Length: 392
Image (cartoon, rainbow, N blue to C red; front, side, top):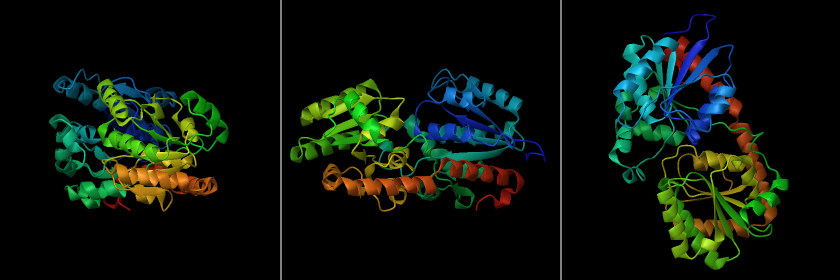
């Protein structure tokens, strides 16, 4: 179903929820900035609520709750979803993440002519999937089969494209559009460092290594703590800060691990914060300890946009994003991570600052919000007007 000339292209985005997460943040950034002269976006959520819902609604984009009542409430949920989509009559149905992607293909028979777009946000999942129950592993396993019914697959990283194409998603229908970042929001501001450090109980002269992300095993939280213990044994003055939260049981495990490693006094658990863009300015070093699964680590680009020197594991497109700045280590290696963090701290402050300035310029030039939105809009226009020429 192509939009007639002069008719806005109706795009329905399907997502599990609008809770805090990298994919959800990128979705909010996209739909709130789409050209309303050409597009009519709407967001359909399995579940209500979430940090990004108000932002999307505030931009005049409808957020529609389908009202899934639990993990196994599929039949009634599917019927409600079909009814709502028939009312919206989208030209394009765009899934975000695995289960919404699969659902988008299953909905095609009820929406004649609709073009389905898969949103591929993950890369190599092999290191982390075994940590999850089968109900979470299953969508990753079957997504390549259902991708046959998609008109276009948009990956946010070259690593993600390579991973999914190796699993069977056709390369000829897969396009890479990297994430975009608001460099007016994520910005260096040294004046914020002192009050933010006061908030964390960290004196201004104390070296501070920060991490941002949900408390989740794939984020490498245990590796972060073990690296902290190794570094503290050589540099006892260093402090570590984790911004983000997760399941209480897992958080308790991490607190216990920090205690067993003897680093509890040097580790601050700040929890989830709405002002995370400001908090990067409190860090001397940003650390990403991810074990895998991420195609494009958003927090890495956010830290770079704030001019912070970065030490990160080699997951997804990390090496390409850093482009020679910062240090990169293998995932799952506390010794290598601790050594890289020590090298970073031993650099003269002006060297780290110059690297941070180059990093910020790279995000502004290569990963701006405008680039991400324009590339996506161009791909969607080509999909409805010239579906055979959509990959460029």
